[in-house]
Image (cartoon, rainbow, N blue to C red):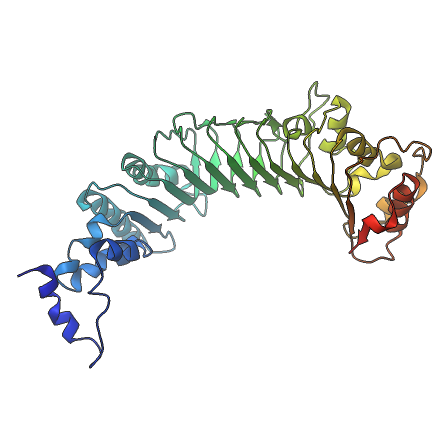
Length: 390
């Protein structure tokens, strides 16, 4: 008798007069549905009927939750379960591996936490996994990933003190890092999308990001030394915003950020007001933005006679859209912008002939900074119909 026939009993237990549509689905569809469950729940479906007894073994996903909030006995049972899950599972390829572990949440087991989950991660890589997400309060001194199938990697809350060299993952396309601590370089020839958010870079040794094939890059809300960005020739969209750290450690003899981003078509550069911001410091290396069409800036570009803004208008010859964000007003910022209007009103040669729209985004049109921005723009030949205040 076939497995489908053996499911007749379960069909009879369905709602009276109803149809058991789940049992009518092909095995591949059932495996796909099971892949959205935590692995512990997926295994439990083996008791539903004979047909379900081994379906979990070939589910193309691992979703492992290692919860340290449980008592020691439960933690050990969790570890044993994962060990047996990997031992009994069919050697079929994986599409997704998600690992969540709070084992090192109190830092007491911080060093051991990654050792606990590393065998699970290596199992997934050895089974051709394409997408990996790891969220773990864990410390690793060397993340050794080797895979010719891994395409997407997402890492949360992990501390890295060793290499982040992804040269052994030749098809890795997307890397996302959130809440991590990074004390090393990030290197990849294959990456096309890189997003780094709320991370902590080292305060003494500067990290370097070398990913020459990136087409999108986002660095958001970081602390520590600003990383050195290598040239990204294929870059289309880039964003470095809400910088919480500091750029230069003494006098640097090279551009940290702007030269690496200078090939972008769309660029967003915003930081809390600081006369020594990494953007202002980088301008002295005079990068050109020959491909830049859309640009977003905030107050850092407006002091000293709008020096930063003038620079971009002079060095972005095909710029079409400019957006100026005004953060909530601070007394010191108001003073700088109000009292320094030293820009040369007779020089209009820097304006891009392609400039179509200038947006000013702030809390209120009564913001005194708006007046000074408008005066600057009118002085340099930007007609009012191109200016939009939001």
